[in-house]
Image (tube, rainbow, N blue to C red):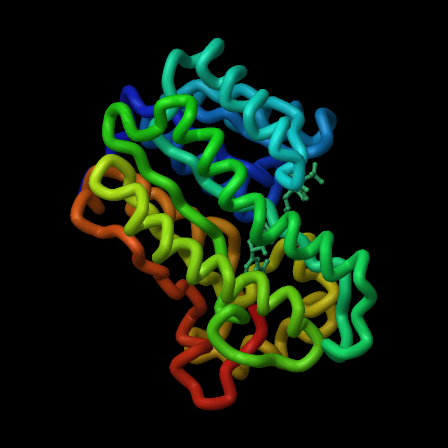
Length: 255
Ligand SMILES: NC(=O)c1ccc[n+]([C@@H]2O[C@H](COP(=O)([O-])OP(=O)(O)OC[C@H]3O[C@@H](n4cnc5c(N)ncnc54)[C@H](OP(=O)(O)O)[C@@H]3O)[C@@H](O)[C@H]2O)c1
C-alpha cells in the first residue's frame, strides 16, 4: 500500500522527540505538512531540522498541552502557515509519579490528568473550531497498553490512559462522520519517557515480549500513518495495540 498524505496538514503534540517526532517524520515522508508542538523551542528546532528535505513541510510552535489557550493559539498558527488542518495527533504525555496508587499526592494526580487526559478534549475542540472536519478530518490519540490492565507502580498514569481509550470511543461517536477518531496503545517503547523502566533491564524485558525486543518509535509511527490516512477511511473509534505481542500473555507487561 502506497500511503500518501499530500495536501494534508497535521498538528502533532509532543513532537520534539520520541514517538511524536517519529510520527511527524512518517507524515512528512508521505507528503503531509506538519506543525510540531512541545514546550521547548530548542528541542523543536532540532527536530524540525531532522525533517528537512522530506516531501512535506515541517514547522514548529511552542505549546503546553495542559493549557487550552495554547491549543487555540497553535491552531491559529497552523491556519496562518498552512491554511487548514486535517489531522491532529494527541501524543504528548507524562508520568510524574511511580509508586502505589494510595500514596500519590494531589498535585501529581492533577498534572497527570491535565496532560494525558483533559488535553485530548481541549486540543480536539480547538482543532474542530479551526475546521478539522471541513475536509474529512482525523484525530489520533496515543494511549498505552497500561490503559488496558493493572500494573505495579504506574497505576495513576495507566488510569489516565484508560480514560484516553474511552475518550477515543466517545469522541468518535460525537464527531462522526466528519472526523474519524482512533488511537494507538503502545507497549514499552525505547524513549526518554520510559527510560527508567527499560534502561537497566532491556534484555530481561525483551525476553518477556513475544517479539523478543522492545518497541522503537517508528513501530508506532508506521501504524499511526495508516490510521490518519484516507486508507483507514472506514475505521473510527478503534484502539490499535502495538506492543510486540505483550498483551497476548496473561501476565501482561509494561507500556
Ligand atoms: N515510551 C513508551 O514506552 C510509551 C508506552 C506507551 C505509551 N506512551 C505514550 O506515548 C506518548 C509519547 O511518549 P514518548 O515515549 O515518545 O515520550 P518522550 O520521548 O519523553 O517525548 C515526550 C514529548 O512530549 C513533549 N511534552 C512533554 N510534556 C508536554 C506538555 N505538557 N506539552 C507539550 N509537549 C509536552 C516533550 O517535549 P518538551 O519537553 O519540549 O515539552 C517531547 O516532545 C505519550 O503519550 C506516552 O504516554 C509511551
